[in-house]
Image (cartoon, rainbow, N blue to C red; front, side, top):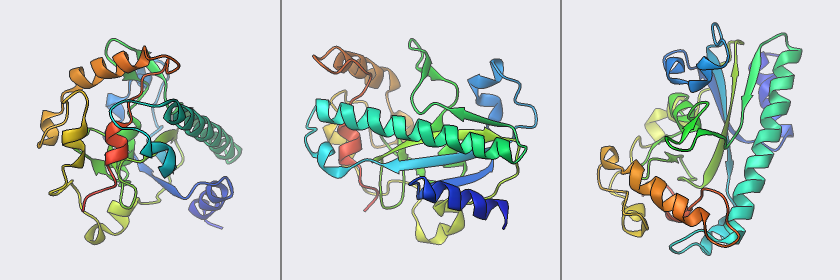
Length: 228
């Protein structure tokens, strides 16, 4: 059985249907993790997405809810567990593997992480950057959470935008559902005009809400079901 087939079976048995794998050599120099771990020859990655349940999102109007916080944390925990098991699976194949936490910030002042899961997902064809600065996936929009595993094992499992590029858009098109609902007014017509500072400031404000305690929002996630 080909390694990609083994990986596919392993992930599906772990409850994962949305994933891709391939070279990230071009974007690897941007990974902050490179300052902590020698990434020489670790040129491949697996990007895993898990969809967020729809009903808990429906309660989000202009701020995060406790139910969304629970969903966010539980999906992150699930992804971290799968990534750890996947890294172990790869090590058993004699490969190097590094599971990158789904949501871990190294520097809150700059919102710096070991790497950008969105960047890895986009590079591997899982989706594209939306106006809301999040990954937008076919059929799911931004209603997913992500995790990544780095490895030196050559793997090629193209994401939907690479496997069938003629079937899927590569931008938001005419859809601007996230623009008007953003409580920070950080989202604009152009993807390039996203205001990271305003978004981050609003998230930190929400973090202080009773019972929240984590840097989340969810308003544009609820709004984004993918381009129309």
